[in-house]
Length: 370
Ligand SMILES: Cc1cc2nc3c(=O)[nH]c(=O)nc-3n(C[C@H](O)[C@H](O)[C@H](O)COP(=O)(O)OP(=O)(O)OC[C@H]3O[C@@H](n4cnc5c(N)ncnc54)[C@H](O)[C@@H]3O)c2cc1C
Image: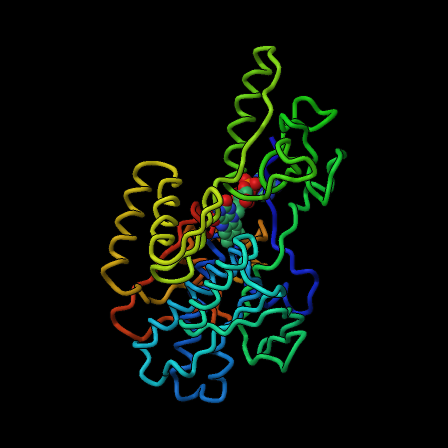
């Protein structure tokens, strides 16, 4: 069964592959969090007054689900963290969302998109519509419209590609994804199935349309393939895959969300509560559900936990397999991995005594950022 997923696509935009952050995996999220704290630490120092604007400006490219949820969480986090930095104030911060369309969250429709824009703007996010990020350097992000933004942090959520490994397979593909029949089998390869983001699955219920690359589809496709493998082993015909999207939800900041479920729109606290409850129910295993439920409950009572985290190696290095193997084998754990990287800014610790360091177990590094 092929389930290779997709990768971030930077469209060869200048500077992006080296400097932009992605938001796809847990290490991506950890790296962003570490970057924000590092920038706050640096900007708070008297020596960095000249660089303050660039350090305190964060740009997110892409107004889809990943971009909107990222900009909302980033904005909440960075504004809440400010109270620890006496030389910084709210008006020094800039958080921008750059979106090429006329309204963010287009999958949810105009009404919810406009609502999300209004809520984000009230929370201090600048939204640039009909605008694209075109290039970046360590100090600037260039847009197709207007002057460059002085910022060294761009989070790119505006494109994915099917896993490039698929291109080496001599089977039929559409848009780089493996074409499957309605039983999720690869035509001509009766013992091979494909699911999820790497599969091109036509929607039998809506001719001409595809099943979108979302987790709710991938999970159900996986179940159907498991049943079909059992049926094939028993010498019985496979069953077709059919599923209709139940709903789409997004968090747009603390205790506010937007959702469209069975065609009905929800917004505000109720949508946020739905978002949390549904995602909690999706977590695998009872113990994980309980751990996360406790963490989220504490989050309702206390402010965000702002403490320094070891910066992981850059994403490009991190995803190089030989890098991961070498560091784990040589040092035995992820703390030593991060400590061994002494390049500027890679290892910044808070000077505050209360700071804790989070260690990243090597086995947990490849989980979903969401
Ligand atoms: C930030 C973000 C938020 C999202 N939010 C939602 C959401 O709220 N709801 C929703 O329905 N969907 C959401 N999605 C989409 C969802 O995550 C994907 O559609 C889903 O994960 C696809 O599942 P998959 O199994 O096809 O691929 P993945 O989950 O990407 O899994 C692919 C796996 O294959 C592994 N792999 C890659 N290459 C190899 C190899 N050569 N050998 C072995 N293994 C390999 C990868 O390490 C990975 O573990 C979100 C995506 C992102 C990036």
